[in-house]
Structure formats: structure tokens, C-alpha cells
Length: 342
Image: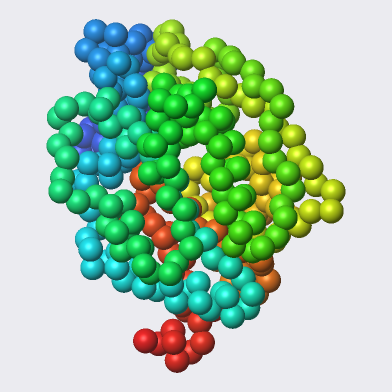
């Protein structure tokens, strides 16, 4: 819980510099009676009457669909990194893939789907589409590069309107659990071909439909902080089953944004890989969902070269942050001196 402002002591000096007034106003706002209820009431009024939200980064789209502002900006191309920077990143990622392969470690780049791309027709009309987006530039420059990659963004668009259950929740920014399941199955098939191995069997035997949101299916809705919950659409929650006997469970490190958390929170990767190792934004190390230290404090070369596969994942919300410092750190700590100096 955040520390609350303490009532300031009145002094002439604090009064004349306006410090007393500033702190006293903040103290009064934080300690006024029924403050949480009044905030919810204000939020509800703005949401219901003006179709507006006080939640930072949350945009109300058409038909009540909630979006993350960063996703919209990337989808519409307003935060374009530039062709030159993207080409340079891809060139260096290919060099990283080659270096990892020398140590019998494969590399896989995954473009997770984006809700703003998936439901682009529901984005408010005031967000203008620019000629080029980060996603388009990455995909165009990856073609013929030799980098192993999966474009789940394009794949989800092809699935739109054809799946039995929703791939995105109304009030969440991440893919649904059913979407995660489809993505995991596709990813595992790709890895089996790439590594020429037989992974543990992954499937589901039943699906439960629920109006009660689980996992991250209401993460944006919770940020609205309203008096009454926003409307939901029933979501599908598969019951997963695994067949692990006499199967290969590769050593994998996944580097990415919060979309990878879907594989972790559902337990999927922990049951298919040797260990669920997830480096969140190439900063926080997670093992089987728990904090396991900081990437900055480990021997990067030793960690990466002892794996069977290194996965780098990004979605449209974080293209401007991608690849999260991974390239610079790899060239500094893992590349041969002559190559790293180029």
C-alpha cells in the first residue's frame, strides 16, 4: 500500500512558498471521507455518460470494446521506429541466431497477435492510420532473412470469425485462454519441426464457458474502477491434458512482454518444457511463475548457451521497446570479440 500524505505543519515560510497549501490540498484529497466510493462514482459517471475513462492507457472503443493505448498507437503506426532501425535489428538477430546455432541452441522469434489489429474496426475513428507500422516493417524485412519466426498476428486475423470460442475478451488486452491454447499448440508444432523432437502431448478434453473472468480476461476492466462491473461476454476456459511419457522436454528460455505470461499462468510451458523460464522484458527472471532474480545479475553466455532453444516474443503494445535490450547485451557478452566489435 502506498504511503499517504501526512498533515503538514504550518509555518510562515511554507505558507509563503505555497508548499503548505500544496501538501495540505493533497492531504485533504487523500483523507476526505468516502474517497474511494466518490472516485468510483466519478469514474462511473464519466464512463456511463461521456463514454470516457479515467484509467491511464485505457481507451473505450466502439461497442464498448476496451483497448490499450499503446496497442492502438502501434496498430495505427503513430510510434513507428523507422525502417533503418528495424533492418539493423533483424540483421543482428540473424547474427545472434547463427551464433546460438554454433552451440546447438536454436532461436525462434514470435510475433504475438494484437487486440487492436484483431479488432481494428472497433478502434475510435479519431486514431488515424499511418502509412507504415512497426509490425509491417518487421514482417517485410524478415522475409528472406533466414530468421526462424512465427507470425501469430496474421494467423489470428485468418482465424477471425471462424473459431468456436472468442480469441479476445471484451475487457482484456491479452489473448483469451482459448487463444493461448491455440497459440501454444501451433508453437509446439513449429518447435518439433525446428528441433526434430517429439514434445509432450498437449490438448484439452473439455471447455468451460464462464461469465466470471479468469486470468487476464478483465485486466483493462479492473483498471476502470467503476461502481458496477462492465459488461462481459462469456469466455472459454479449456481443461488441459498432457502426455509426457518418453517425450522430449527441451530447455527453453523465453524473453518477452506480458503476452508470454499467458503460457506461464496457465501452466502450459511448465508441463511441456523442462522448466518454465521466462525473462520478462529481459529484466526479471521468472521460473515456474515465481521471481528468480534479475537477468543483469547472471552469466548471460552461460545461461543462453546451455539451452536447447531461446524464444523472443513481442506483441504490438511493445514494439517501441523491442527487443528489450537483448541484442545489445548478447553482442556485448556472448559474441566473439571480433564480431561484437563490428
